[in-house]
Length: 179
View 1 (cartoon, rainbow, N blue to C red):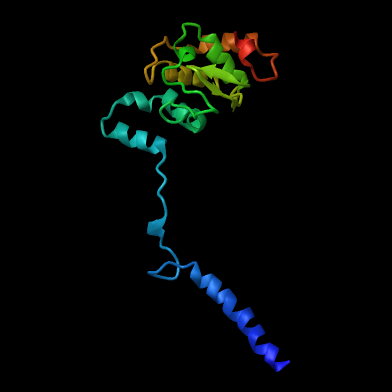
View 2 (cartoon, rainbow, N blue to C red; view 1 turned 90 degrees about the horizontal axis):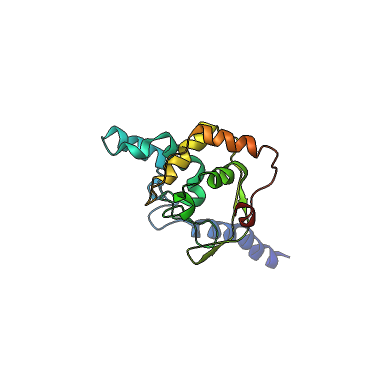
């Protein structure tokens, strides 16, 4: 029994300590906080740029809402995510004179496969009907005037009209329903 006791103690005590300390870096027991990546909020960067006299267009309410709500999927510069979320930069839908399609998409969401500029996307966009008419108008105006897009601004009255017309809708739009 004594012959088994020493190897058992070594396994129970030495193995956990070896495992614990093998995860440490060479210069110390654990990594330092300097090793951690630093997250810089795009909103804070815009606020700093606005204070420094940079172009105020990115500090607009529409840009702020875009960064808080839309940029997670469509990315900060509107380039989208390949295969999932289409780009808004240079988007024919964003440049279209008819603003009702993007308003309907923001209000009720979008789902299903679409093709844009020869590339296929198949993501789901959540409905953002909790945003006010003013916020939706500002964010769509920002998208329609950024990244190579040059369409007219969207007004809160246009958003309200579409919201009223589609108030009975409870599901996301598909490509076929928007055409």
